[in-house]
Amino acid sequence: MDHHQIKFSASNHPYRSYSDFLQEFFADGKVQKVSIDAGCSCPNRDGTKGMGGCTYCNNRTFSPDYCRRVKSVSEQMKAGIRFFARKYAHMKYLAYFQAYTNTYGSVESLIQKYEEALACPDVAGLVVSTRPDCMNEDLLHYFEQLGKRCFVLIEYGIESTLDRTLMRVNRCHTEAQTEEAIRRTGECGIFVGAHLILGLPGESREEMLHHADVLSTLPVDTLKIHQLQVIRGTRMACEFKEMKEAFSLFTIDEYIDLLIDFIERLNPAIAIERFVSQSPKSLLIAPDWGLKSQAFSERIAQRFAGRNTWQGRLFTAYP
Image (cartoon, rainbow, N blue to C red; front, side, top):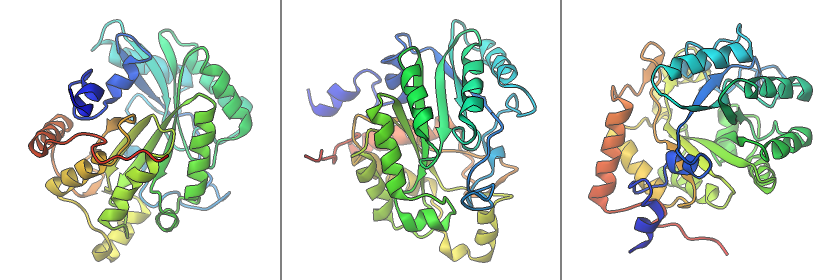
């Protein structure tokens, strides 16, 4: 039996899936994330490091209806659980602190919100979305201890491994800070997630593929990838209107080919949680593919099969 058959036999995918990853912690794999808006901000929004936030960001594109910061953390959790409980029986839940930077603020206040979510019935752990430059030692110690009693995953917004891109999109942190945060978190025995956007302005195809090489050297457990989308109400929408020639937005086929090339170079130990994102049509300027998530997944599976390839086929571990 060859390498990829051994590696991915659990899911019958040519890549390591997020469900495979969760089954290592939850035996039956029946776990659902519930999004929480904890009322956090970002240091590149409030003037600490910058103003205006990331140029591509409009949080309305990924906030569920039950997730509104006028509600308390426990109210949001209970509403989310009610929503999913109608669909799935005997489910465990992960409190997903999703909107903005969820380790940015007073340590005492943040921990109080995490613990409020964990106190809800059937909540089995936390997924906390944040920035690489917003993880202090006190919180890291808290998460390290918490990980001994429940599931904890810290999801870092990386977006790019190129400093010039990070500057262009107003991230206000560096690649060195990204690598330091991921290594520190991994050394504490905490699961690490990463989020990456393919197609940010100014990046060549080879530079995008090289992101896979960089991530493959880091203790990353899960990865979300999606295509660049230009969203209404963002600074990038203004840039797109003024200089479309600076943007190279993909067709579906171009993006799928790029994805598979990327995944061939990716460490096969990294579980892929997401390949694509589709913002609400009312907010999306481009690219408007009009393809549902399931149909996109089927297209990816067909392309993997057609190319007879798999995650990590071209990965070489560094000594």
